[in-house]
Length: 184
Image (cartoon, rainbow, N blue to C red; front, top):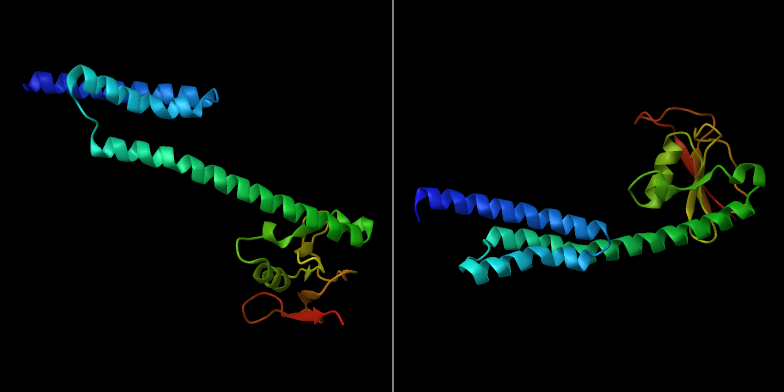
């Protein structure tokens, strides 16, 4: 292949790849995800039939990664939705058992950070807040109307509670010294 023919082939491949990508995105945006995922292989088939050219290993790898990540993303989304629904259902039960004037300020510990809820509850206590695990197994904490942690809240229904120790004193790590209270 001459240098000019090679340059033309390179531009043609770029144009076809770009066109296929734009067509895929367009089909996926209209809700035709399966059709969108098949545009690139269809382009490869036409090129092979017309010219005998095959896609490069990198092109196939990129397409396969994108195609196969779809089911994983769907599974992850559905799992997260189920967990969020369960957390919300339990949160409503916790709020129902607490005084109504405070219930709107009760939040699940899972919204506060990325560690396990019990570790997050300890972090909240060290930062001056009250966190507890309810009898249905949900770790929660309470804020005031300005989203500040509340140190002296006494939940009505709890199994274990973490809160700052009185008198309030800074710990060696810069947070508050805190204690665990277990319901008897």
